[in-house]
Amino acid sequence: MSEKQLTAHDMELLICAGIYVEPQTLSGPALVFPISDGEGGEIRVLWQGGAYESATYTDSRKNQLVFPYLELYDLLFEAACPVHSVLMIGAGGCSYPRYLVAHHPEVSCDALEIDPKIAALARSHFFVDEAIRESNNRLQLQIADGVEYIKSLSTSNNKHYDAILNDCFIGEAPPAAMMTVEWMSLVAQCLTPGGRYLTNVVSAQVGEDAHQLEALMDAARMVFEQVKVVPLDLEVDPTEPDNLMLVCQRA
Image 1 (tube, rainbow, N blue to C red):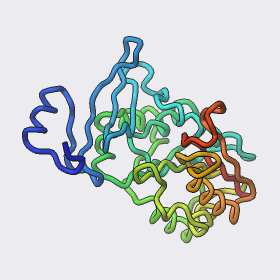
Image 2: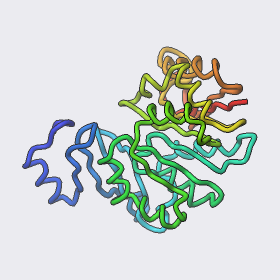
Image 3: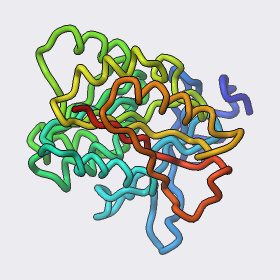
Image 4: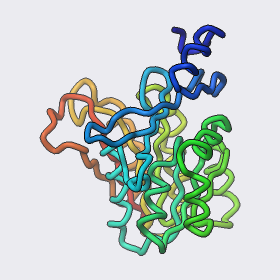
């Protein structure tokens, strides 16, 4: 089945199988369907391009995190200053933003999603509208291009965030525009003093497969006071690609 086009027959088969189909996102078809959590519970997933893009529990655990790498974003709370305002770029199904406002009543989060179809799925299938209500609007989901949003915010001086989180990917690579010194500088201008920028990257820590990480670190070190890499799994072979969190802190 093509990642870019579903036939009427494909659609019929998927719908009959209980799978919700959004045929026309910016990156091709997206599917929403349940899988087992292995313990008798259910996880609802957003599937796109051969991979799970977002996931949520559908029971009382709906504000818990399914994907372990998202827990690394909690490193934002190790910043020198208190955290009250957070921006998340590449929100998808808003797994971390929902978790954030549910567990930290002192925090407000603006979540950006470039694709209006994905944002609609987040609202209709991933409890985002419920999270907005329950948090008294401390969570806001906006349809926006993260690069353009940061460019505009950096020149307006109207708002600064205590932390900016990035989970944008094109395949397994960060967008090229988010790997430059210019990008890092713009992000830093949108942070409060002592604020943190955290970006997820799938990369080896050393060796041939570490080029994405090395490029990000080179750019970040030109701008930020502190830059470190935190691996998801401390025991993983550092020459093998895995989820890593690049943590940058401004002065």
